[in-house]
Amino acid sequence: MKQEKAALEELKRINRKIDSISGSAGGSGVSTFAGYFLVFAMAVACVAALFYLGPDATGFVTFSESVVSAEPGSFAVFEPGEVRIKTDLDSINSLMLSGTVYGDGKAAVFLKGKDRKYLAYYFEGDASEGIAFSDMCYDTCHVGGLGGDNTLIFELDNTWINISGIKYVYGRIIDFELEPLVVPIDYSSEPARVIELKLTNRQHADYTVLLYLDGPLSSSFSWQGSLVHMTPDVPEKIIPITMNLPGNLPKGSYAHKVTARYVPPDTYDFVGESPVAETFITVYNE
Image (cartoon, rainbow, N blue to C red):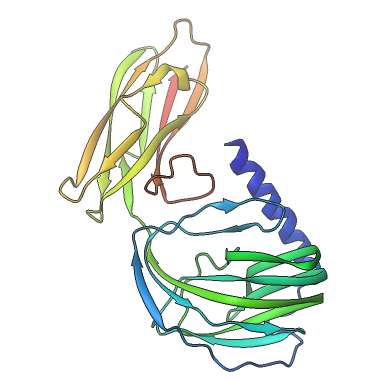
């Protein structure tokens, strides 16, 4: 997970820079644009929760069973201010921006909330020739309680932005769980055993999860295959995990976390965040 940790550190660094230029949620600009309405909708199976890491843009996209509406029109913002946007969807929980930034300075675009601003896009550097970005949504990947009428706040410092598209998502996160939540083991009486974990398909959906274990004795646990495929006709699966602990285990408590992580189709090498279920195995040798 080194790539994932690096991505998180990069986001924290960017957020610290954004804090230095952000004002109140109300903004200080006076520009107001007419609302932009979405003109078509399409169903998608999954939308990714990946970090896009590169020299031009960094952002998130979400993993969910989603309905997406996209705004194909474009508009330009040349000075700090607010832009009112609209969608035909009654409620949304994700907003993504695409476009191009120009200039040599800083640019940040926020979604205006009731009590705070949600970062959708941020840039700092030289974009004299223009730098494109696509489906950016730092803090707006998952925002609850949004209606169809919203406001974007543009904070621009020697830059301007052309927005070429706004994508709205109403998504239902894949929901599953692992049981039991906690498995305590007494090493003195159980140096070897089979642990049965139950993976429950709460939405009766078709999807795959990646199963992995972190802990000091990880090499002592094994199971058949790390990818577990769930189908609508199988509400649950029993996953046997074989534990075979080493001899002469030093005294102590050894905690392990088993994670079942949702994997979107054909993207088993992704990094970033996606829905997970967790269970814990603790070995005691007192």
